[in-house]
Length: 316
Image (cartoon, rainbow, N blue to C red; front, side):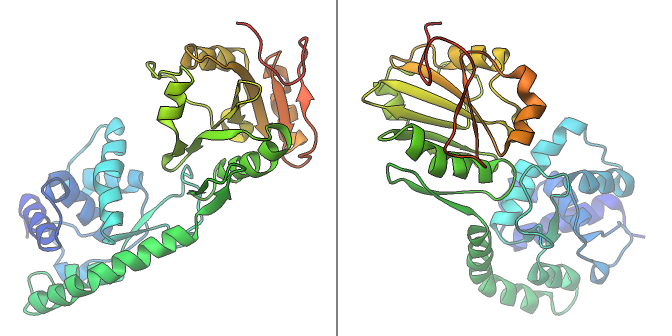
């Protein structure tokens, strides 16, 4: 019977042979690989398989089969510092069953790529060297192929000021696209797009120097809104939230945003954006006064929540 520590060492050797760096061939990454291959300490390498597994299932396998019980807060470490790099190297595929799955979906999963599986199954056999050589020759092409597949599933966006970028699929990003392409031309004509968040990539647009010119110094850890545009002729910064998942600009969120942008020279305007009025009604009691509300299914209309002016900043 193969000892668990021996099998982990073999997995490290395999990762190094596949071109992984020291961080991606340490114990954590080796255990991640073994979980993805569903290979127990006593299983021969040709028994390796390629199920689709989420991060939680991977960590459960490490615990159950290799007695490595990582703390729950380690899940992000496994995801960010092993699985992401495995995906970038085309060692694994993300969501092969649904490439358009939202980034925050609990069904997000990983699967060993077919070529990498073949290499793993040949490890320790006479054909390993030749199989590895063929894989490494094909690997650059595989990386390009998988990168192209990921890019095709992204959401293309063009802002009114001509910026072109893409957002990761799913989540609130389809609504953010509508905010940029439907709300802004109608209600912030001539505005500059300064910031666009992305649930998958954290941000798609971030004009840091332009913010600095407007007096905005980000010296807090406050969460940014989903979309920020600047209207030069009115000297307004319009802060917009995609409220379908994280909720609207309520009183607490309004104070948080005021703190993040406390050094801004332009006036601040707050807008909660919903996909439709049905979704808005779920959050209606929470929406802060002196803010605006927009629904993407009726893009030509804007709702004003009290105050002395319509779509404009107020003194804090």
